[in-house]
Image (cartoon, rainbow, N blue to C red; front, side, top):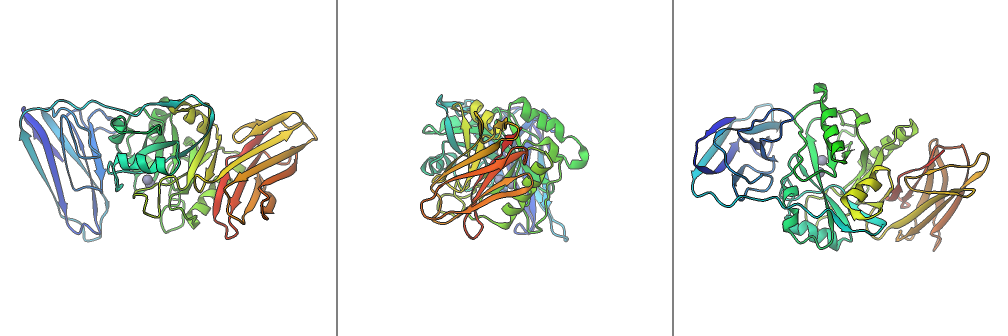
Length: 432
Ligand SMILES: [Zn+2]
Ligand SMILES: [Zn+2]
């Protein structure tokens, strides 16, 4: 919906109204005079989807989800996208107010520091969450406090279709928590995916369908920033079907465990799907993330579940490097810790590494666990299914298994409660 901004305007205010807001969703965003062509992001000035029906922007400030900056004269466009509309249709109205005044000192971007420390270790992170910058119900500072209180070392900021939060993490007290920039690319009908490890000013466009055949261009933008493209909650609605409409081969990983502390059927389906890809030789990193939208007191806190990454340092570069090769396990919370090692002769490999097993020799697999429930089941899984299962008894938190070399291309572990809920899940150790 185009409108003209004359010279001298210093603030734009937009208000959207539409019928039956409980049932209909008319998503909202805005582009400046640089234009709104697909893939062009220089004109992008914000997106709030269905989370807001009004916003403002000026040189110094903007509503969350929107990008502050100079209000240039020219043709601006409000982006309206009807994602959920009842059969009766919708009546809608946009009110735009243009304000002339004294221009405020311009907003300067203030991204989060990219390095917290240079120590190697296993770092606990949550790869998916929301604040008021999209449809979350918390401020950035509240999110940082929750993440720290819940024992995390890093978070990835992933708002729906906007990078507005990434421009301002540096304004808050991160308290030695690493904040990595990301975006949840949300194309409602075809699935959601996370671009993680981005530069703060990078915005990945979401305005295309699988039929447009352009997603490779956008995934290449993520790769150019040394980022990763992760398929989110592939089974996300009640139909219990995989709704992800884009070419899976282009993606680096799958969020096999999404939000809601309690393990559920959709997570189960996602793990099965991931496992079926591994068996076909299609390697994807498995990740777990809270997708938390609401503050700590809710049943969906930040860090539950989480992805624990082995990295040379707590920095954007090294966390992304560890994750890229699958040096990561997934855990229900920060109390769970594990190590998984495979040995053959003098060779040893950990999660995400490759073991060169000597011909004819057995591979010894060692699992050590901390923080598990009193009773649980640990399962060793290979490319033809379950290789070993052990029910934990008492304090037995160390397991040792032997596998014939050449019998499987990978080894991974699942730890579940006796009811079958996931407690921890590893990425594979690969066998040569
Ligand atoms: Zn999503
Ligand atoms: Zn999300």
